[in-house]
Image 1: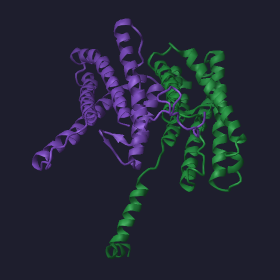
Image 2: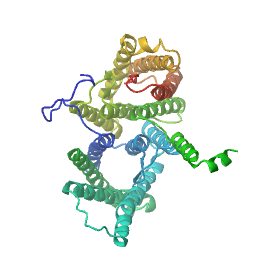
Image 3: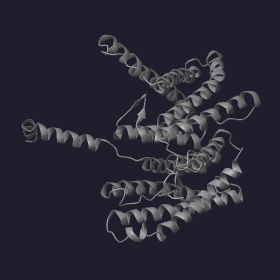
Image 4: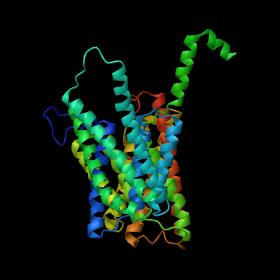
Length: 214
Length: 232
């Protein structure tokens, strides 16, 4: 079993080489992780499992930082990986690691940070990918209407829904910070597991579509 | 004088801009990114242990072990690099990686629930993985035996790999002692505590040295000429 072995030609098998690009590999892991987290939060709310909130936020921040460092994905766009972006990635990773190792000291900082990051990512993505092209298309429409393949349409729709859910997730993360009473805490507690599971499922579906497109 | 030249020579200016742009771009592979994150993890772990040992901070061993397991699993999922050596990234390996990442995540999310299995897994990864990689480093014809013949960065690379693997085994032995004696090393007042903190700090710094060596070697030699060594 070395990398020199040619991939099997006999269709899908567990032992064939996984043609997973980096972004899909992250998506697969993040999707599975978010579904697990959502189910665990339900366990906390209904079964009394003690959940380490600092560790949970820390791990989410470490994953965000890895996406920044590895693919330059930050705030809804693919950036050139400059030194300042790598510095941001390392700083985020450091904060996430500290939050995991020493619970309690950074959770209050990381929660609004993750909220803002999700809101900005979703808003920027929707603005740049949907609003700007549609305004541009109205002003200078193409000579012939462009028809996208169904899978591409599904990809576009899934990403759009993912970004909308990201914005709601971000707002929900900010709710206990902005409204530190029951008005902020109750919706946060109720919505958090639902949103996290939906985000996880959407990420897995996105990986599935990307695999089909290959 | 330079400005004058570039005004006269737009092609040269473009070339210079492209060069500046190339310099500004950080050419980090996923392997180097994960090694950097390992470095940050162990440096912070070592630094945080000092206030933990004085009793100023409380720390979560489960979360630390869990996070380590998650980062190791990400190496498996994204590159097919296991703690015991490189394998072809098959779907079964990806599934194993995701399963171990889930185990690590569970250890982070629910402290106390998986202390024993996660500690044992972390110890096995560190000790057996470290020994396995050290043996491969010195036995394989493509690695230390070849690299040590070439003066310069490849010799540094051999040293960096050797240092990381040896420290990995030592950190694993500390982790093993935690499993055997029930984590009584990292308690305030234990004289062995600061030694462990310093060991973790040096282990973290060794990852930065290894990342620097890999990046420099990759720039100097084409990928097919240099087989990238890895910690895992």
